[in-house]
Length: 548
Image 1 (cartoon, rainbow, N blue to C red):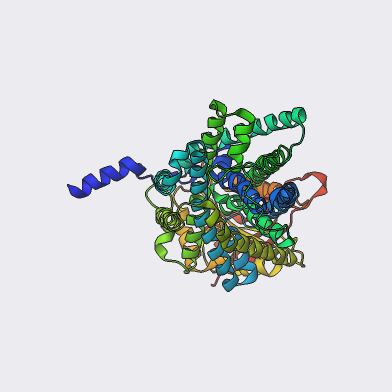
Image 2 (cartoon, rainbow, N blue to C red):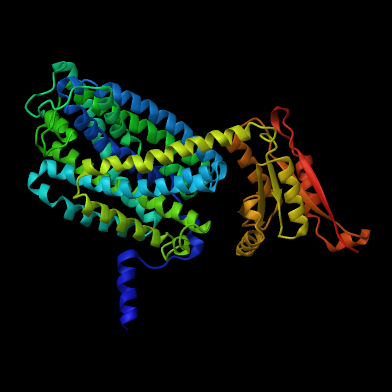
């Protein structure tokens, strides 16, 4: 009775178990994916602005004059980083981000270093986002300032439970706060532009400025740039989670990355520029964005709405970590570098152990650093920038390799099972191209798991990924040709994907009667299929002679 009661309570909190067949249905469209994966990046505007202000305020009004140039450099870096991760999405559609890129291109040791940095960044993102959100709330209600740790831990518990309920629920729950934040900040930026045009520029208010403690120096500017570059945190989340998008995953992930980068640039440059132009400063118990909102709207309902939206988006910003951390940990567990328990899907089709581990580590940081965002920010250099650097270095290696002689034989190989003929054909395919995919068309529902398991057991997943295509009407040719068109459309490189067909050659002519003619039918369909603009699809037949 006790076990049943516990299970009932557990299902009440995180929901009832979901069958594995619903895993494909738990994908996100672009609208919900932006809400689920981008709040960490979008909400970083709040604490990045604060760090730029705190870093330069110690040099007085002279130091604050550098806010806008620093923000422009960070925005340019954001653009480059986003373009790079859009390429990562295309090159590594299985996800993994920095870990997958560094592991393949720079070796196991460097890959593990990148993964460790990335996991640290995810933990810090949770701690910093929650403490910054509580500071936004405490800026409006200063009586809450001494209770920041307790409030942060309470919010951490809520966001953990939301993630334990599953990906679909997470995307839905995050939609309203994220889009409310974007809307209120765009309104604030528009109001700031109007105010700037009417009132003109103003010097920083000396009332909230601390005394000039240090002279302006190159070191101070660089240190402030490093702190302000925390605006880049969370950019990688989309490249880590490409598989959670609805098909075609790569195209949707790239579109979402572009929208996220544009929104980040507008929010970051808009708020920093208006803050400097209007000479906004903040006291010791108020954030710089709170001071900006109060300057534009007073302390009325609109100001409170902006502070509330800031709190909410910073709370859900932790969701980028709760999506990315468990997936990277699961990839590392699959490769044998972390406990296998982190690879297991929970009853709600999420990596529950990874979610719980992340919450525990973030909660520990919040307690140890007293809920102070400014004290937590420097630790980002350990995780985020190390992972970014190694990821970009890995992508350089990837493209240098891709620009070699094998860059253009893109190969798809149909398979009906795992046998010696398939292995021989796969080995030949890898000799002529390093861009090989094996495709299994699932004619009978439920037949693919056995093929996938055998594919992994023979180690073929290290040679080429196995793609499973469902066929509701038990047709092989149609779904396979449709998949070729999809691959060509996503590649968009002016070529048609080559098809390598493993084919049995019986010892006696009459043995052909004992085999189906799928290979012959596929070749016929490919040979007689016309393509526009004179494009040609290569068809490679690899025979496998059967014994007498």
